[in-house]
Image (cartoon, rainbow over all chains, first blue to last red; front, side, top):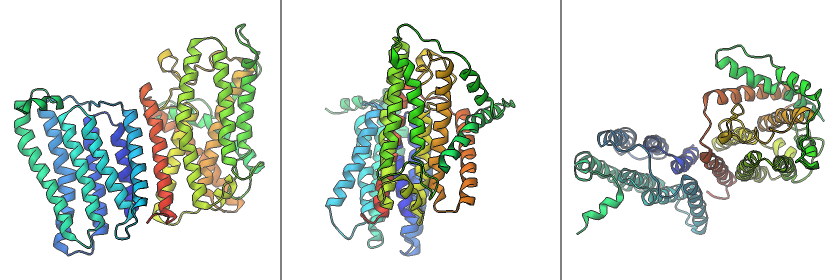
Length: 209
Length: 301
């Protein structure tokens, strides 16, 4: 059953490549949160109960409810234009994401380690590279943050792959998530709208001295 | 033999059910189920008008189009019964004989000398180019899964066991339904009702055809729908005996027609430059199906 959820997760990555509106990005992040909840529930059922409850609470509360809610709030409050402005057209994004998935598949076949399951490795690496690609090719700062959240989901999947042996690794992945939520809360909600009138990554250049 | 008869029977009512479903969802009662057939019969009795700028290709192309569709139907099996033609690798024959028909309809559209039809021809060529890897990767994955390369053997030995093969079957059905919409130029790729220049794809290629030729082209659309419906029905049939497969076939065709009608009523056509990326997304999804099949076969763990 985890294989099914991982395949749906990869399809959501493809959808991320062709989406146009910022709201669609947020809905995809919420869907990925729900899928990670399912995978974590099925995989980690053997670790002790308190750890498991923490992990499940984190995926549902943070990834599915809190972060999409805050992203929505930021978009409405700062009156950000609702179109995700890409540098490259969505067609090329789709081709590049397909190539990313294919090349991680070929890469995982070259690494013959028996301790890690291949499908987890492929999905985690392709999520990581897709998140990196989203950071690189969008104009806005808010999509920068969304790309980082996608990278975090990838790290979480990789930690689930070895989660039964090392439960503390999963907790580390979660702390990364909490860190980003505080980051968004603290900086974006209050400061960015006041300081940078134009939410464009080119404006970040002005911050260097 | 039996699949040919069943597909011809299904093509008689398929478009009628689509139009009826669209009317009912709009609140009307709609025309009868055999109304499209009556329209085609009326067109068969009329004479054709050929323009002086066209050559022999324009007069020959509709016949080649419908002949290619009939030849492609000869390959399709019904569960464990073979089609009339069946050999190793016949799914490649299927795709390319349909491609021949499409090629002739494209060059006949350009033969008329109207740049309007040439525009539709180039769009049609682009969308078919992106839909082709989707079909091949999909059927290729099933060929890999069952170890055979002919349609009849693939469908006879396909059975769904684990969770993952169910989702592969569901994804394959979705990709086949969407490919039907692409190949027949229906929503959300192309609106069959629009006649605005900026937005036509298939309708514009057949603007200059009339009479018997137009009747053949319209009946070709019906046949193509019934053909893809037969492919989808074969995914679910397995090796059941005949008294089960025939009702399953007709139920799936009717359900497919209702689904197409509902999809057409409730979705708007995509922007023209978004169509290409949508069809490429179908190819990427079928690539994921291929990777999933590699997983099922335990070639990866």
